[in-house]
Image (cartoon, rainbow, N blue to C red; front, side):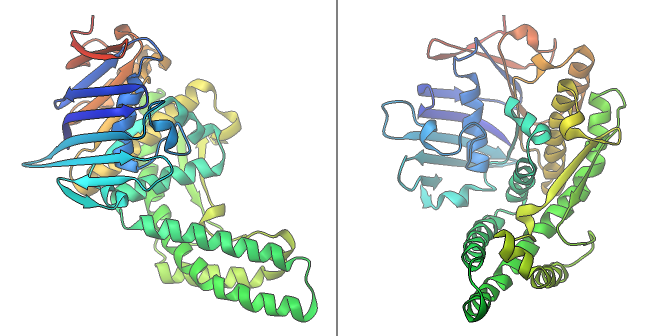
Length: 375
């Protein structure tokens, strides 16, 4: 897959931008704050319907504008598609595939992209929710239909937690009636949770050998590994129904503790993708350079999983990654991305990028995006 055209209207700092793109490596260079990242963020947004840089969509709309628009033309083999998204703060966003109006969620799986951004250090240094999000975003690129499962689970687990908190001060008959109501939420929480957990476990198994290899390449043979830690004991071969049964059993046994603490103790909302470096937890022990390399390996691993399953390259986005790497890691990363159908790279200055890496350059500055020679 690759982009041939990208057009933005009032997206972030850009008023109007129209770009022609080609396969290979395209670099966007320019001083910080000029909008390089905004360009590649728009591509990533089409793939994930979210931004790593802001919790909501309002920040994506240029100050003073009513909406932002992203349009892209994609080529997959001998097929082409045009997609667009209107981002409307405070309203429901509008999406098109070709000329057909679709729900925004239907764009998932049309544009496929994997992006590394500096904020991805939280994949290593941040809490478990960051790593769960990483797995869920990868799931949605492979299984767009899981969007509804993830959304429904979030609603169910919030409702269940609210009921648990309400039960805490009750006793006697009132508590028993409340527990009867709580059990109504156990079944959907277990069913939806099992669907999510089995997907994550399967992805972790596919990612593990890739992350070990990629990190070893980026960090001169150092050892990294990952393992998914569910809240119930399961194996990668367990069917969804098996995991659902184990979650239901655990919820029943933990009824008193859950009411006392006011939280649901079992399910994917409390699970963790554990990362280790040389046998130690990466979170808390990894240096800045190690964290950076591991975060890059996680994104490249996700890229490989998508490529292998769909037999097609997603678009690879590397936002300001090379400046943080030493010469050896730069060479290793350059070797890792050879042959990728389309790579979009940003850098403050052209000299941050390895010689011979880039096929086409754009300079970003003073509100303009201008094709150049990288000089």
